[in-house]
Every structure is written in C-alpha cells, then in structure tokens.
Image 1 (tube, rainbow, N blue to C red):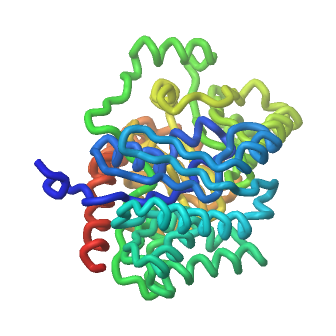
Image 2 (image 1 turned 180 degrees about the vertical axis):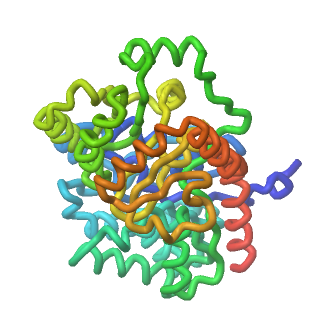
Image 3 (image 1 turned 180 degrees about the horizontal axis):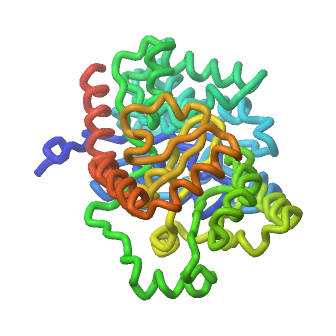
Length: 412
C-alpha cells in the first residue's frame, strides 16, 4: 500500500507547535498537540515538528541559555526543529521570537529544499508563522485556533494576537480552521471569512482504552493511601495557574462541607500558583479537606480519576479543555464553570453529559452538593459523557487532520 492509499501526504508535513513551552513538564506530554504529532508519526507521516517559541526545560535561566542555541533532532520520520529564540518572563519577547523563528524556518526550507506539501499549526499565535510561509512559499496551510485567547488577552497583547488572527484568517492564508470548542467555532465563523471549519475536541484517547475498575487493586491502593476510603471525592487534575479558578473551590468549600462533611478535594497538578493555593487553604483552615499530590505523569492518572466521584474544570470563559475530555473518557461526570456556560448545545449539553455553571462560588457550592447527593445522576451523566466522547479517538483526530491537509494540498 502506498502513502496516498494510507491517507498520508506525499511529502513532508510542517507541524508548527508550541506544546514544548508548557510551564509544567508533565503537561507537555499530555497535550493534544503532542498526541496528534505522536499519532501522525506512528502512522508514518514524514514531519518537521517546528517549535517557533522554543521549549521549557526547567528554570528561567536554563530556558534562556538552552533556547539561544538552535537544535535539530531526528527520530524516525520526524525532524524536531528548535530555532534560536529569546525566552523571557511574561512572554515579553514573543513578537521578536516569532520574527526570528519565521526567518529561521524560511531559510531552513530554502537551503534544505525539503518537499513540504502542507502545514498544520496548533494555535493562532504560532499559526502566524505558517501564514507567512503560505504567502511566501505557497505551502497549503491548516490552522487550529487553539484556546480562546481572543477572550483572555487585553491591551497590546490583544492587538498582537489580533494581528495573528488577521494574518491567518482574514487574509485567508488558512485553507481550513479547526476549533476545539463550539463557542470558539462561532467566533471564527462570525468574524472571519473562513470557508472550511471543523470541530475536534482538544483531547482524545487510544482506541481500546478501558479505565481501571473502581474495585481494582491500583484504585483501592491509592484510595487508601490518600485517606479517601468512605469519602466523597471532588477531583481537579491539571495545571495550577491564574487561568484556572481554583480559588472558587476554596471559597465554596465551607458551604459544601457543612452539608457533606465527608467530602474531600483532591488537587492533582503543579504550576506557579500552587504555593498560593496551599496558603489559601491553610488560611481558610481547610487543610483536612484538601489533598495535594503535586504532578502525576499523564499515564498514571487513570486510577486517581476513577476513585473520584465528581471532576471539575474551573475557568472564567469556556467550559471545555483537555481535562474535560479526559474526565469524560473515564466515564466521570464533569462540573465545568465558565461564563459561556449557557452557549453550549452540541458537544457539551448541560445536565445531560456535563454540568455547566457560571464562575460563582455560591453556585458552585450549591451544585456540588446537589450532584453528590444523587449517585444515580452521577452515574447517568458519566455514562452519557462517555458516549459523547467515544468517537474521538486519537486515530480519528489523525484521520480528520490528514483529510483537511490533503484537501488543502489539492487546492494549491
């Protein structure tokens, strides 16, 4: 069977990504951007994985030094390419870094004469690099919008991000745009002349994956070690940064505990605000109710999710996210807060396959109590969540992405 019969591109794919910049190292390997690249490589697609914003490997000093030197690594049919970039706190040099990276990849492709037949970018920010390559070299381009940065950036940062949006979408450099959230999809279609859009959630699972049983040895062992036997468990698993409203959980906890004294809050993850979160818990005298595990490798998370009764996603805007899909794959009910909670009708459906509420501590407390007092509701919503996410294996992500890329290449 030749490459075209397998659905692969007849040439190199330029895969432009920023998942190596995640501040939590474990999260780099859990990113959907990583999994998509991994599955493309497993399928046999030849790729240049280009990282225009560099990589995070540890401390700010180590990041600065390591990113000054360009690096090229080859693994099978995949070339990992890190240009020389200037990494600084608070992304102060992002614009300069993107300019440097764009010049680097243009020079690299010109000198190596690699036959790049299509491009894919994982966010609008790095998509600006792909848009320039499309304009100057004519390489067809598919962009993933990524997170809802149009609602998270302000001032000069929003203007810079708007420039990237216009470069990719207003100027129609992207043949297709993938969106991971239906509100984001509506924003794209209502504000830009994009002809082709496709929804793919920002998460998936391996075909054949079955979560461990609730009575399995690994689950029971962790439940005992965490002191969760006979307890109700509300779980959050993910990064601990200002984007995630874990302060809402701390504020709502006293009201929840007053109704359900056996409840415990299991916080899995790391991030720059972990110390502040621990301090807030101590000041509220809630140490007996909050359990912090720190980072846990993505491949080891399943038993922790299975032992929980309810999983939460806490944001200011959307109700989606990688962890939402991960919870749903484990057949767990998801409670997601975000001010867009009333705008979901397709993938997420309130009180059917998820619980969607505004970002408010009183509402959060009342909803958690209501849900945890109804075991049959937890089970029903968890099963509905699984049926919703079941079609979206990583293989499905690859098939749909390659289809868009082939269509883009044929329209050249």
